[in-house]
Image 1 (cartoon, rainbow, N blue to C red):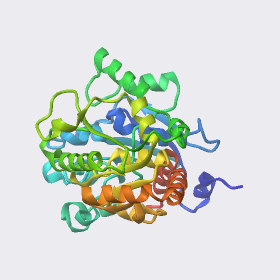
Image 2 (image 1 turned 60 degrees about the vertical axis):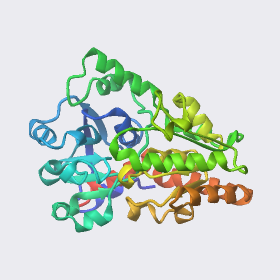
Image 3 (image 1 turned 45 degrees about the horizontal axis):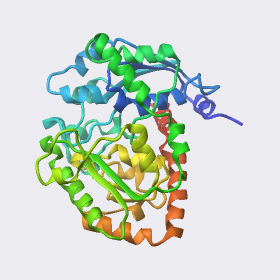
Image 4 (image 1 turned 30 degrees about the vertical axis):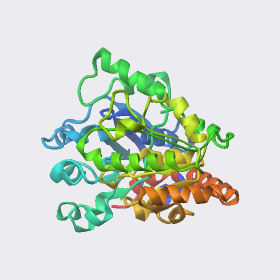
Length: 376
């Protein structure tokens, strides 16, 4: 059977990408999903895959754009790559920042978008803003929606781990190197999410969220608090719910403060809940929990998805689950769904299939490679 890469290579004037280089200057927790995606399509994992390399230095012209003043917040959440093949050689990037931050940038690294990359993949696209903002409209054909990430283990050799751990926009030094190694070790392989599926339930809902004190998190923190309060007061829902923080919080948040869970325990408890509750991040961004809960196969009661809708809205049973807004609506739907075990089982099966077909790192890799191989 003809492989995907062979199909690309026989299209006239569309040479297949033979080599992808990652320039190692990103936050590892943010970049991990897409680095796992790149590994999945490489020659180490696919007989007809591309070579995947890790470079410690960003080319000078690209680095000057990356370090442009006014875009400091975006530097560690924009991941830089180079694609090469017979007759093709260009840069591309993946950006997971939400579209509402960073002042006048609209959440985009404008110097890279305007002059540094052929494709600007983005995990959080506010499609209304993209359609209306002149700064972005001029480069609309470069912006490509991509599958939303969550932190996962980057598979590879010890040497590749050492190369990744040595990266960053500034020299890591021994302390930074050790911190990046700890991050790599703490991430969970995608197969571990699969292994956690279907375990006996330990609660109806596990809704423990980190509390962030920054001003742009205020609205999200209030929504989370109100959901927690509603869950705790509902006699028909067995919930483990709270805001995780290591220090006392201002009221009313202190009344629902809980300790942090180690990540393995957190994921085990999340996987052991009957229903996952999804809330958007700041500026309506897609949160890591979107991918994590689908990877675990959880039925979901969630707020409406406002970013990357053109990519996600057609997924099976999407609008059925991401259809609510207020804390009262969310908790009421949880209570209703708990009374329907047949529907819960159907949602669990559907969400598992949706993740495996559309939202894995391998699925992201396929979208990236298909785009890179488009004629220009």
